[in-house]
Picture 1 (spheres, rainbow, N blue to C red):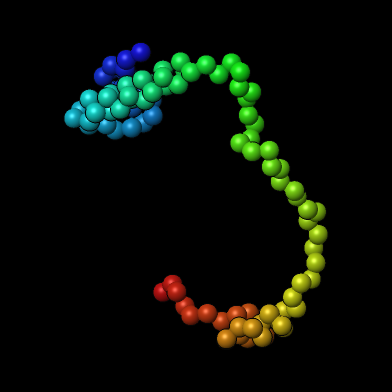
Picture 2 (tube, rainbow, N blue to C red):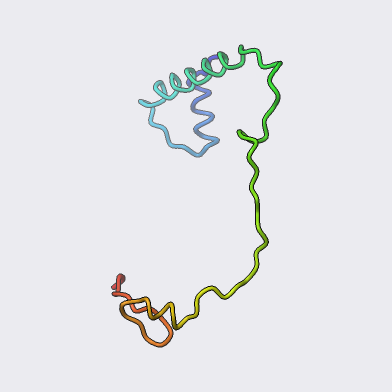
Length: 95
């Protein structure tokens, strides 16, 4: 299947892309190269290959989300170079 310049213009319009006339032929060549590549992939016999849901058999082992107190605020603030009683003080980055 070959894509014509009219096809490229139609797809560009549907995708709300503004393609210059000088770029249409280049875009047409690119799309046709992708389609040739897809035809090559379609010619591969995959009848003996099972469909995959994931690339590996590894599964995520999720843990329960439990709230715990891990570090006291005063201990955390003691680790900072400049703090007040509640927050870390940092240099202003927005004027």
